[in-house]
Image (tube, rainbow, N blue to C red; front, side):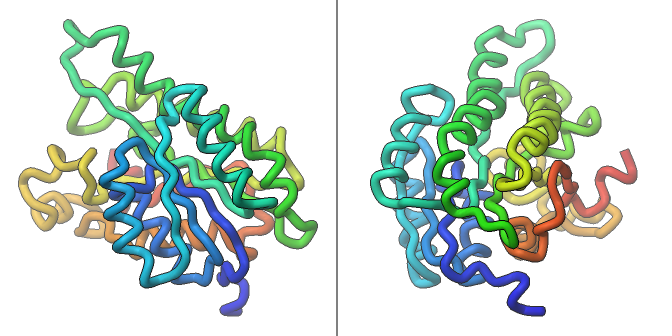
Length: 258
């Protein structure tokens, strides 16, 4: 049974890998035996810190890129292709957010957020399909795992002025299902829809403290690194070989009380 969840020999790419959920995902992959994890993000200093933190667990390398641009997608694709003949999992976790009142919410906020959260997911997935196909087998297809959000299911209780973010995550959920049909059976495509996890993006939502905010949730706590690592390893491993086109809430029960 343990072998179902092992990732020995597998190579993964994790975008948005400089902090927060990206680091949680990468840590889980390395702990499950991944041979190598590539982290990508815009900020080189954050990537360097993540590599230093994760290197004791296995081989991890950083590739800076702005995945909200076609040039950034191409740069990451070229860098990975120069180092690997195949990859086994792509985690499209890079994300952008923008909060502003309805009356002043700018058009640029939709452009930037959708460029990173939706268009970047599509373009990078398409660009890395050849490497993913090379890493796929009939018994264990390659994986694409997108980071959606519970805000893509429901209007958020707090932070209601994140118009472009919530809309973009609903689009990620729909795109996940469409890509799953397009890329089957060699590549499985699923999405994780996180709730409240400590990160730079959720800092404002957790100003009252993790314990106080978590107490309002059915599971009485906010998400922890192992919660994200567990779902990431499941979706990247042979344990999920018959799962595609799903969007899995990892939210402590937020989705059942909204």
